Length: 121
Image (cartoon, rainbow, N blue to C red):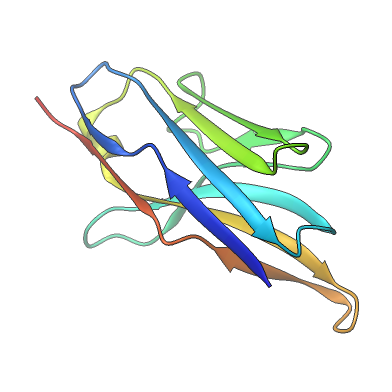
């Protein structure tokens, strides 16, 4: 099993910054891609950014140039630095980890409980 715990959410004014953290514990070997997702009220959960174990990152078009995903494999933590925040960034942010399950010959996804980010003046 893999446990993920997000932190760092909160209330911030438009144009402000927040840094989210996702601490990973449990059976962390064979975790490859990790990602940040968000879900606003009445909307589907969407990918914000993801990063492979080797550090290759991808971003949603809506956050390119404003958000930066990173991970510290030694500390088993992933981060999301969010700058120039906008009201439309308001959502619950979740982290996800994909772990290779050898007995199943496939990746299984594990999710955190989410952290609320509210951008408002």
